[in-house]
Amino acid sequence: MMRYKETVNQSAEYLRLSLPLMSRQAAALHPLSYAIWYEYVAGINKPLKAAIDELTSDGRVLDEAATVELYRKYIAELDEQSAQRVSAGFQKVLADITQSAAHAGDHADQFGNTLAQWSESQGVAAPDYQAEKGIDKLLSGTRAMQGAISTLKERLDDSRSEIERLRQEVDRAREDALVDGLTGLVNRKGFDLALAACLSAAETSTQDTCALIADIDHFKQVNDTYGHLFGDKVIRAVAQILKANVKGQDTAARYGGEEFVVLLPETTLDGARALAEKIRLTIEASRVRRADNNQEIARITVSLGVAAYCAGETAGEFIERVDNALYVSKNKGRNRVTLAPAVTGHRPGRQAAGSAQSAQS
Image 1: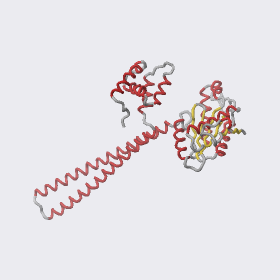
Image 2: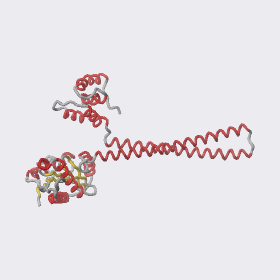
Image 3: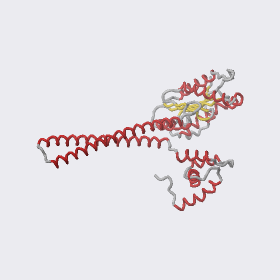
Image 4: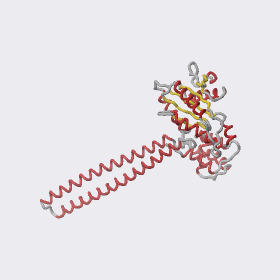
C-alpha cells in the first residue's frame, strides 16, 4: 500500500512548507530529512510530530544524528507485527518454492526413467538410426533438466537456511528491543505489548488479572548522596528481587526510572497483595553495599500500588488506577502497599485514588 496518497498540488504545498523548516536545521538537506519534515507538515505521522515538537521546543535544531534517528524510529522501522509477518511470509514462500521444485524433480525423475525403459525396450527391436538419435537427445535433455532442478533445490535449501538464520536474528533483535538494558527486565514497550495481550484474554476469562507498581522511596536522595552508579546498583538489586518473585505468565518490567510494574494474569487481588507485601518486606530487609568501600547504606524501601482489572477498562485506565494507589502509598508515608478500589458505580479507571485501602506490616 502506498504510504503517501497526496495529489500533486498537495505534495507541492507540503514541499513549500517543508523547505523553510529543513533549512533551519543542522542536518543536510537529504531525502531522509525531507521525509520527516514532509510527514511533519502533512500531519500524517502524529508520533513523529510530537517527537519533533519536543526536541525543538526550546529552540534547538535537529542535527544529523537526530534526523536519522527520527527517520529510523518513526518512518523506516517496521513495527513488531509487520516484522513478524515479513519473516513468516518469507519462510512460507521459500517453503512453497522448495516443495514445488521437489515435485518437479520427482516428475523429471519419473519421466527420465520411463524414457530409459522405453529406449531399452526399443533397442531390442533395432530401431533406425534417426529414431535412436532422437531418443538419445530426449534422454540427454531429461538428464540436464534433472541436474538443473537438483541444483535449484540445493540453492533453495541454502537460501531457506539463510532466511531462517536471518529470521532468528530478527527474533533476537526484537527480543532485545523489549528488554531494559540496565536490569534485564522487560522494558516499557515490552510491558505494553504484554498488557494488551493479557487484557484481550482477560475479557473472556473467568479468572482475575492484577497488576502492581513499585517505586523506590527517596531515590533522588540516594542518587544525590551516593552517585548515579550506586543508584543504578540499587535499581538492579530491586529488579533482581522482582525477577525472583514472578513466575509463569507473570511479567516484571522496568516502567521508567526507579519505577517497576508487574503484570499478574490469573491472580486474585489477595494474591497480588500478598506478592506486593512479600516484595516490600524482601527489599526492606535487603542491604546494598558500595563497591568502593563496601559500606552498607541505609535501608532501601519501596512503595507499591495494586489493582485488579475490571471488565471494560482500557489498559490506560487500569494502569492509572494502579498508579493512583501507588501515590496513596507515597502520600501516607511510603514503604507500604495500597489496594486500588474496584470501579463499581464509577466510570472505569476514573475513581478517586484517595479511597484506596492501605496495608503495611
